[in-house]
Image: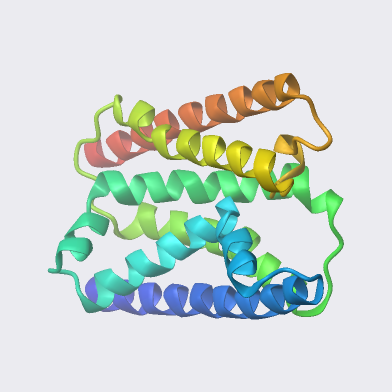
Length: 211
């Protein structure tokens, strides 16, 4: 019974995120093309958002766990460390949007619909999946430091790309409005948040294991 509940939950969550992503890509690509960007440039711009990357990773993970759990990628995404990292990253997506970015944008129609799916609904729903259904094993505290590698690489990419193109996905790392010193300070505190929350996830997993 629990396994059936898990499968249904994963399927519904995966479909919801895929719907949000497909619609977001369609409406955003159309908008970027109307602004004079190329199709390739529009896709790269979309994939440069941490929100899009992590919702896409979760959608792929859930789909593979449902359809190809024994494949090499299925086994990769079934790892407790990988699923915990995804929970951490999508939690950061939610917190940054709700605390910093929501007040900067007023979305309407399908843009608002996708915003709510990708920023407000998918994060807590995936974290609930992690809490309820994932066998977390014994995660080492050092994993919290390993999980910083991805956001660090992402930050380097965004700054390098922004310096070349002038496009930055988020206001708190926007090189056209902030100095590199201000950006470095913002990212330092964001990285510290990744670390603290990563340790919180590990601590929670260990508490659940004991209970």
